Length: 80
Image (cartoon, rainbow, N blue to C red; front, side, top):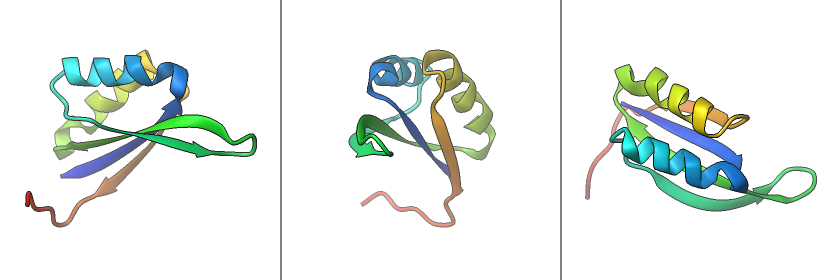
C-alpha cells in the first residue's frame, strides 16, 4: 500500500479530484498554503495499492499539470 500526496495549484484541484474519483480512487482534499509567495495550494491524499501508483500519476499529470507528487510506503494502516 502507498500514500500519494499530490500538491497542486488551486486552479487545477477540481480537475484533479474529478479525474481521480472518476477512475475509482478515493481522495482526501486539504486546503494548504505555502511557498515563497504564500499562494494557495490544494493537497490531495490518495491511498493506492502498489500497482496503482503509475496510473494515479498519469491521471494527475493529464488533469493537473505541474502537480508535485510524493509517494510513501505504508507499512501499516488500519481503518478505525
